[in-house]
Image (cartoon, rainbow, N blue to C red; front, side, top):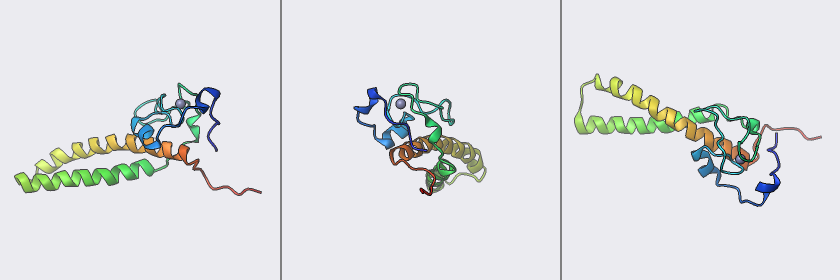
Length: 131
Ligand SMILES: [Zn+2]
């Protein structure tokens, strides 16, 4: 479950910040290759350094953080809209259902990238009993 050791070309390079690499969707070891093969699915390997990304298992973490943070953003904009303009009731579902979806989908990729990078940087994994 431990990440692969650094290759000879990447051993001397300082590791990228896990937060920056995760927010950019970059490889947590080299910071150059992409960790995603599409919008949300992780690539099997980094295309630059070859880091095996199959160790990453973020579970429900990205969804939790994205909905938690997205809820604050959407609620804040909703409160601001109500105070500033007092729109009719129908405006809220028409505006905030798509707005909430876009905000949460944008945040979930960022959260997944950060959690994978932090998992790599902290060598986090399942608990195991060592004999
Ligand atoms: Zn890499």
